[in-house]
Structure formats: C-alpha cells, structure tokens
Image (cartoon, rainbow, N blue to C red; front, top):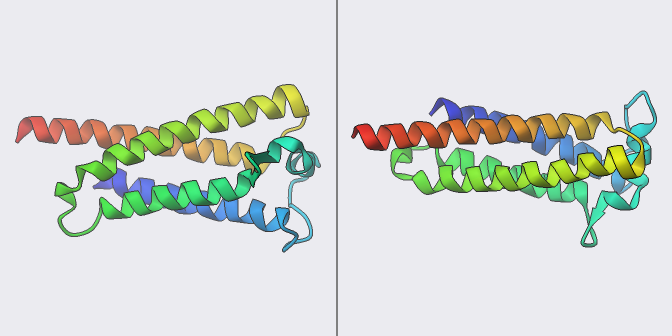
Length: 145
C-alpha cells in the first residue's frame, strides 16, 4: 500500500510538471521559469514533438495513466487488483526508456538542458523504482499467502 501511495504522489507531481510545460507550449503561459534559457531552447526544438504530438502532452497523459493505476491499487479490495501493479511497472519502464531518449536528445542533439525536463526524468525514475518495489512486495505477499 505504501508503494501505491508513493506512486500516486509522484504521478500527481508528474502531471503538474508536464501540464506546466504543455501550457507553455500552447501559449497559455508566456514563459518558463528556468533561469538558464535552456528550457525554451528544448521546448522549441523538433524533439519537443513525437509522432506529431507535443512531448509535454504525452507526459500529461502518461503521468495521468500512472496516477489512475496507482489509485486503482489503493482503494477497497485493492489487494485483488494486482494487474494495476503490473501495468504500472510496464508503463513506468516505458516512460523511463522514452525519457532516457529525450535526455540523450537534450545532451547530444539540442545541446541544451531543461531543468523541468530533468525534474520529470527524476520523477519517472523514482516512479519506476516505486512501481518495481511495489511489484516485488506483491510477489513476496503472494508467496507468503
């Protein structure tokens, strides 16, 4: 249960961060609080879109899905909802892979760092670790029962 709650909190933070970047991208807010200028450079690059979709919007959707999966695993009868733990692990693993590619793009292709993107990378990495720990604890509980 503690891993599911941690995953829910991390997912909510991810939704908020990705929503901030998306609001900037669609012009709803005038600028990003960054300090280095790298955030605007990254957001203006062609790598800020993937298959025609804004990466920030993909982040909002991905974190929202992780939040839903974490919350499904928290409610009444959650001990029978092991599928949500497995799906959360798969989703966060895919998220870490996608984020690793984007971080590579920042370093090697764009030559600029976005602090918000690095924050999102930290969140998805912690979220994946939390999902893995939850899945591992689930395995122990199933074996002990």
